[in-house]
Image: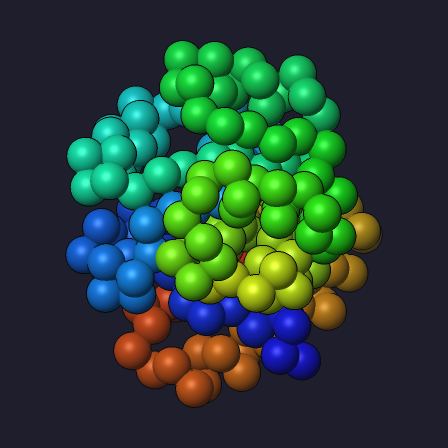
Length: 179
Ligand SMILES: [Mg+2]
C-alpha cells in the first residue's frame, strides 16, 4: 500500500546525515520520539542524540517533535531543547502534523516525517504529502498488540528492502523478522 511505504528506511537515526537531507531538499523534520529517538524508558535525550541534534541544527535543519504520547512526556523530553512540540498528535490523523509542518515553515516539499511506526508515523507523513523516513523501533514491545502491528507492517518492509537493495538494513535482525 503506497500510504504505508516510506520514502527512505534507515537502520537508525544516526544514519541520517545533513548531506542526505540536503540531497533530498529537506530542511525540516517532524519527528516522533518514542522508539524513534529514544526508548520509552528514556525521559530525556541521550548524549548521542543531543550530538545528532546539534549536527542537524548546525546544518540549518529544523526539528519539531510530534508524538501520540501525552503532553508531559513530550514536554519533559524537550525541556532543554526548546523545540516546537506537538503531543497527543493522533497520528495517522494529519491535523496536528499539518500544524507542525506549518510551524516549521519550510513547506511540505522541504519537510520530512521521521518515525518508527508505519501505521502512524509513515501513514501520517504520506497522507500529509511530505517525505517520510522510517527507522526500526529502538526497543520494541512484545505484547500481542505490537506483534500484530509488526505483522501488518512486515510486507511493506520486505517489499521496500527488495526494491532498495542499497539500504543497509539487516532484515533478520529487525523487529519485523521476529515471530
Ligand atoms: Mg514511536
